[in-house]
Image (cartoon, rainbow, N blue to C red; front, side, top):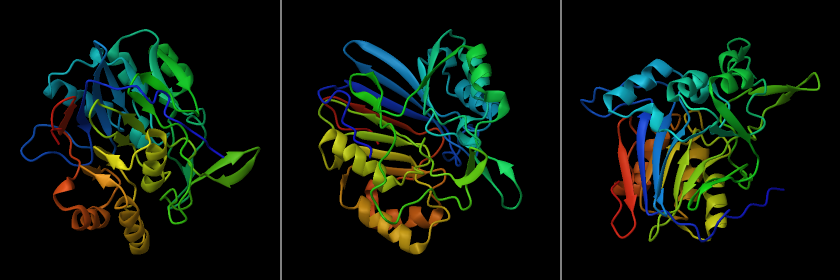
Length: 307
């Protein structure tokens, strides 16, 4: 049983800005490149300290670095990388990105199970986890210091990971049929224990949640963060919700589960799927915005959030 609490209940940021560096779609008339995957850059300021954290790297490092150049952002500004889970569309080219950042002992935070074999068999046997070019040895050679942890991990007061997410709902599952791994020579269904998210708390605002694919279930994630932070209000819940292949029943229950919480903004994208996005737009109205490459979201203490 997973029991987690906020690593620092009193921790607060002064400002938190998110830039969507890569996503399946792009903003209208933008020069950015989209890709099947997700990557978001967060700039966190608190206590006179500002740090830049990259969440995931998509699957095309050339496209991701192109977007960095188009946005006039130097990858060298990145102080840490958080990987939400093992899949290639979040991790492919990670070693190349670490090398482009050009720092020694760069914290790369992930679950201990990230490097396991993770595969599907339809239409044919295919590994969909971390590829050989991004192995632990190659990441370390590129400059990474691996922080492999199941618990929530605080990066600075007001910014932390969820750690493993407790599965509480009876209608959410990983969202990919036939996903498997091998343990002790035996094929087993893969429950995606490594799926985790990022939480930011800005003074005067409800929590912000950044997800990769929500294989743990977006409602399970929101439930866990609600418990960790002691609130039913959220400033923003954004990222991939992995409902693209979900049944209409699951989509309906997911929307109902999210509607139990007060959302100031909800921004699903990547693997969420059009049907689920449409259902969320119908339920949340102007609170809903589809995630797109190039978007910038800023939340500052003492100011209304810029969604």
